[in-house]
Length: 426
Ligand SMILES: Cc1cc2nc3c(=O)[nH]c(=O)nc-3n(C[C@H](O)[C@H](O)[C@H](O)COP(=O)(O)OP(=O)(O)OC[C@H]3O[C@@H](n4cnc5c(N)ncnc54)[C@H](O)[C@@H]3O)c2cc1C
Image (cartoon, rainbow, N blue to C red):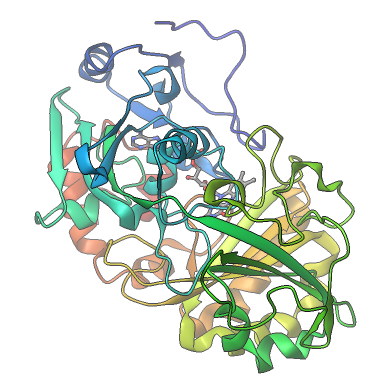
């Protein structure tokens, strides 16, 4: 256990310095319960990969990575019980070694399971839901220091899984698992921009998980990263030399143009285990570019093409501060605060240069452009949408607020971010 900080903790991207007075690293759930019971303000910290103040607190920040890294596969492989602070990459290695998998992963394996689920993190794939949708039960230390277990099907469960850290510190989750599977990854480049709108359905149904990368610059080619399950015939692309006016990449690529491909997962159609292909970035390397900010918006699937066109119209405002942008698809789920709540979605992701002042106008321009499509901002990334707009995007907003009041009546887990989007007096 530790309370002394040599320097103020910050998030992974170092654009947020947390306001915590203390950073604690409990080594047991019992110790965590004591910390929560004895604190007026407390907040769980996962792997710190969020880009805004969602994980911040003015009180005690509790690192969940110090808790025992439990991974227990249920007999018969019906589910896995995993400690909240375990990173997806570590979980994946344990599952794969036992012949199992989770259905999907985000673009990086470095994020903690509970932290990723808390913000509605997702990968890509027409049939793939957000990572949180695979949770069948969660256990958390609540404001009084007690342990609570919520199971799928109970009244509050769908509100608690994407919980933004506001209901308690999640110590363990049960996740659905499937038999391990193999994936091969192809990259196509120099695809004309018009093809993304004209062939939207063909592109995103062409693999188990598909991403389009773009710089939102007119005249420049788009790239498609296509992850196909081995043994399941791909609908299109899939290793042919040319597709949609573009061509198969002749060497490994990095999603961020100009960066070496070393930190990217293997491509060129080489089959490999699911967890070494579904993320774009390898666990042993720094993901993405490191010096960056990120934003992302999810719109209803039917608006995918129109949203592409709306963003293309403001490409000249996006491109100068952009490192790379990505378009993905996400299947609907029933989790109240999921960005894909009750609608199949298209995600528009932006990796920015790390310059708040330069990026904010581009973020606002995107929010204006996507407003007609009721775009939901990613909870863990940079956005400027006012609270009343965000509130209007979530039909179960009131129910979540009631859950916050019930689990955290004194506001122990609250922070500036929660108070802004879920004001206690609302
Ligand atoms: C390079 C990079 C790539 C990314 N790629 C994707 C992507 O492909 N798809 C996507 O959707 N997002 C992506 N993200 C965003 C990222 O997945 C989310 O920000 C996610 O929440 C990070 O998980 P974390 O463990 O770092 O959580 P943190 O940032 O540490 O915390 C996020 C929230 O979860 C809460 N929390 C953490 N642990 C617990 C716990 N045990 N109990 C209760 N609450 C908890 C925190 O209090 C906070 O509110 C990316 C981020 C980076 C930096």
